[in-house]
Length: 372
Image 1 (cartoon, rainbow, N blue to C red):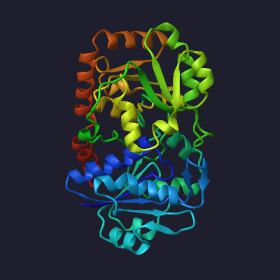
Image 2: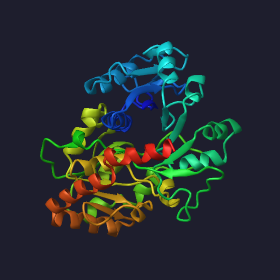
Image 3: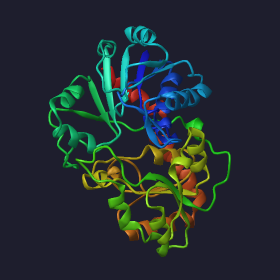
């Protein structure tokens, strides 16, 4: 198949976001499909050097190229700036590709437009990486927003409980199919031994969906005393209140530096002993079943993960390599369990990644539903 894939690499030019799109592109290509990346959000890029939204897209377009080129995709992308100008491949080239495409995949709002060339593609799917937030936003949205989602043939979500009795989030007339972030496993083989740090990469608060849900800060404060309960060291790559966290015993580094490039993000994970991950409040309180693409990368690197339960434990194994917590006592017990037999949990983490997140299994299931 020929697949036009829309992502948000330039809108959020950081390693973790980049890997999300990149692993779709690489995973689909490995299955024998032809792929092309488009970014068409109608928004300005974020330039982290200037720390601003920039009308000049140079930082974002350079970033896209530098991220894709090492994987042989340096000429397989186009970025549409807020003013409608095309960068990378031209508008005519995008239209020609779309005219012969079989499938349009929109990840996380990689395009908010229904241009004619997208609408004419036979199969069109949206992949929701913010479950509960997305559905709550649709429920209170203006008609254009609802109509945007109605034009897709299939809707997918990383929230395994969305649309079931396990979650109170209303889905209205929409059907959300369950999927996970695909992981290209060979890209996550670590080349180094980890340091003795449980880590994560996190944003304290996000700008989007402010009117429909709560952020990670609401959950993290419940566990802020964790360093005082264990001898284990922690390091947070965080965009947030570093001084406050250090006062409670957390080591911190700047999240933007740790995830400035795909390589830096991967190196930070590989240098970690395990992940300690807290979820956004909206994921937790709505029992969305959301599971983090970041945590999948830890597991694929053979790094155990101790992460907050959002309802994902009904769909994924918990106890070996991947452990859930809901309370501070749970978190302390999970740390002790991982440290008591680290080698076994590291092996189990990799087994979980292979069994549940390998792109070679995730993507064929997605394509089967997408093109049914």
